[in-house]
Image (cartoon, rainbow, N blue to C red; front, top):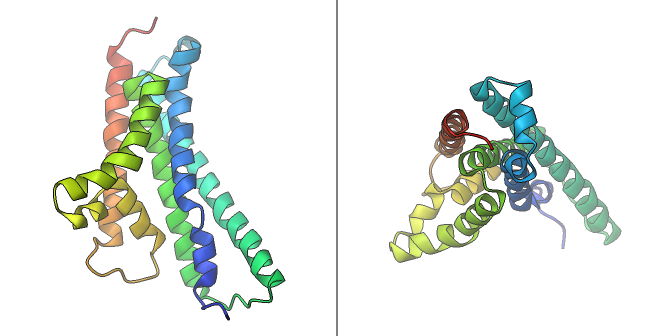
Length: 207
């Protein structure tokens, strides 16, 4: 059947969840990985201001996440479009504003997940514990908690729900928090882990 006009937007969203988790993992490796491999000593000697050191990590990993989101959206759109074209299916068209909104949502979420990972890694300092804890929260706790509390709508107020809301930027989503609230939630989590990571890095002795 002919593809709906929003199909190109669906292709842009394809892989966005995996990209966000990859950005989260990259952020954790960039901070907690320094403690695991002992490179943190040289890093802190080169940047003695530990607060600025952690802040720089958050900014750089946020930027890396945004680039990863951009690459994913473009790649999935091109690959998916070529595949559907080979089947003789017309992709249709979508307003450029809607496409840019979806792209911005994918990049924004990936950027914030990268910063969250960097802050989490700086806070926990143990690479395995940080990766395991993050994956357990996203893949298990966020699915079980709304069921356990008998509040299905709670999903929309957790990390995964906020990310999905931002992927749907051009579309109205009833009974869900606004895009601004979803963005504020992710920014708040990233800022919280960033402050915690900065405090731990300042106070803890590096051996």
